[in-house]
Length: 234
Length: 307
Image (tube, rainbow over all chains, first blue to last red; front, side, top):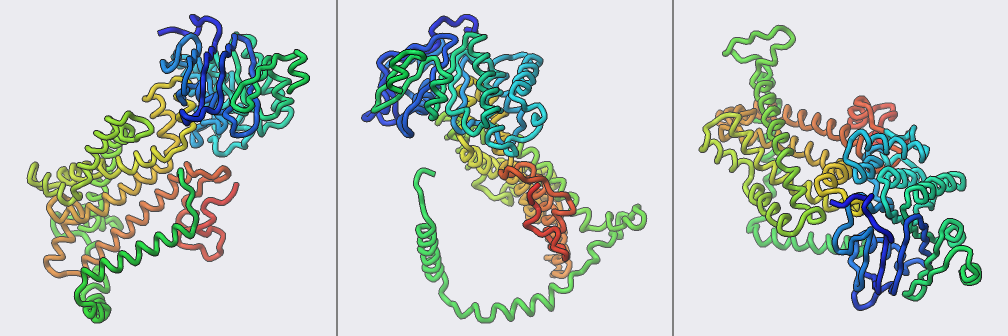
């Protein structure tokens, strides 16, 4: 089995990919897209246009209608190596009756086999997200913002190569948002991972991302941070 | 649910079903006049044969000689011996049934397993469920003779069939996002089942297990009649001698045990309720809430009051 250390760049490649649930009417068509290690990419666009479906397709939960999709060196439908893909769905996907620690350890479990290291990673991630005092609480008793932090901690404990996050910063107050974003950015930059985030707040998307992908009328328009095109068109 | 339905659709569907049920019943009943004497017959039977219950069933048996001291002589009574044996049978059968139901229900759930595995697991569960526990008891009595072991085996088989179905339906009804997150992360089916599916559907799993324990206890009263042990043996004995007042005493004791099981169910499930800001009730609240405390401080609805 390949490990995360063997992976070659880029982390994500999409070639002539059409996505959607109905093969006769694709939601988004992507001629060519590459995501490199250390990159933060935001996907923006109106509701119902296919942003989350794109993320679910990359996560291997929805099959692309056509085209070639390569995640961490593995071409779908073959599954990428265990633990290289971190996913924060819009509804978070937390186990509501289980504790914060249990949920965070699920991420660590995907990333590492050793129990000791799993616990260590979980403790670190819980600390970073400021959830130490809540670690034994069941998820259902946490606020929406706290639950988002748990989902983020789960991904940080996993230490994946490619993080897919669907509006993971919503419901957070400004202070928490800054610290969560800082933690995720530090991880992505430091470990040469990549983050693809669906973000409905366009100004926040511009602020956090190196590259902004705006989905409009079934097509992806890429804008690179700092360029005139981004300032003028987005 | 994929299709949205409103209250009117539900109400009219239910009305149609109700009318249909009455029409079917009317087709089966030839003489409605027989209903007229029913209530007076019941009244006569109740006061002449059933009431008051004969609580001598709680007195120690003459033989074997009771060695228990005051106030525990009742532990030598047929009611106590029968109830305890039935509880033991129900407990063992439920636990064995749970252990066998878990892998089968995980395999049967369509959102967790491939079609061929799901179908074959459902086939096994349906086969176990197709015969009532009484028939399984007769089967095992023929196979291994009379006694509690036949009762345990009969109830275990039936528990697997019934509990397996309830569990896989609960698992299929769970939110799919935790499963998708686990799948995307690369967790194995085994890890997902143990760490995501079981805790996420814990409320239903516990509730169904306790229900099955209660069901097995009540079934114990029936399967005892065919010689599979438990309180049913004594009920059958007194029915044969037409001592219905003693039978009523046994039935009231069974009712009391069922109520106690219900308390346990309320308490256990309170740890896994969906509400965000609830706390588990104390035992005092469970019991007083059920009976309705005079002060109203612990009403039934206050069992799950806010923190």
